[in-house]
Amino acid sequence: MNKEISKIFSDIANLLEIKGETFYRINAYKKAVKSLESLEKDIFNIYKEKGIRGIKEIKGIGESTAKKIEEYIKKGKIQYYEDLKNETAIRQIITYFFESKGLSLQELKENAKKRKIIYSRFTKPAKQLLDLAGSAQKAKEAINKVSQWANSRKLDYAIETVFKKWLELDRLKPKEIVKKPFYKGNPMAWSESKKKWFVISKYGEWLEFADKENTIEWKVIE
Image 1 (cartoon, rainbow, N blue to C red):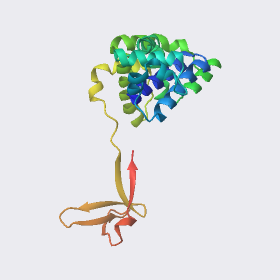
Image 2 (tube, helix red, strand yellow):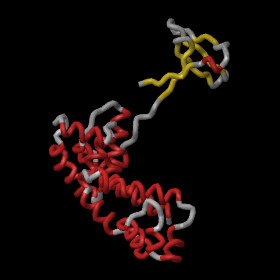
Image 3 (tube, rainbow, N blue to C red):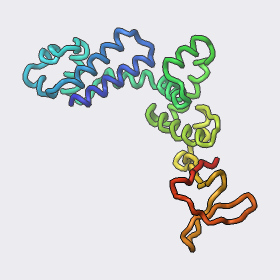
Image 4 (cartoon, rainbow, N blue to C red):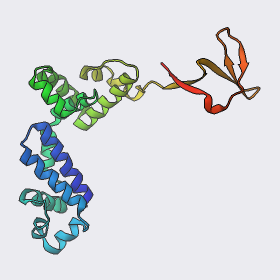
């Protein structure tokens, strides 16, 4: 159970960062994560033996996090976490969109402060994508598919691109990376009938390859 609760607290810390909460609140959950990860005994057994008092005795676990651990043990979920996911859904989508473009949350915030990125410009399409997908998680999965497809083709994409590609998401595949053999700058070809490599000269001649196979250079062909 330690891993389950640790994962939830880690998610809460990330969502609080997206929300723009104070360092103190975010750090409280990060400290709880470290405590749970280093705990040798299962938190369920500690609670079973000593109740919430036993949880509070763990270094790094405060009053608020202890109550949430107790709630998870009793109910199998933490309502604050569920509410926070819903509250930050649109921000999660916007943050994930920029992460798919290689921009961290901190960089996004800095660019928004400098007005290099107009954050409000992305709120409406993110809300539309959320309505279309039904959840922030499904919206992020859709963004991921579009980003992999677009990046492999060196194409730019926006949140709106996900709308346009929505009905074909399952068919969107990253461009296949093709590697072809070369020897000293000349292309090579494999003869299935002769079971041999040949080097193709600049004049189009097929010259039998006589060197070692580790001298063949494989290049990505765009």
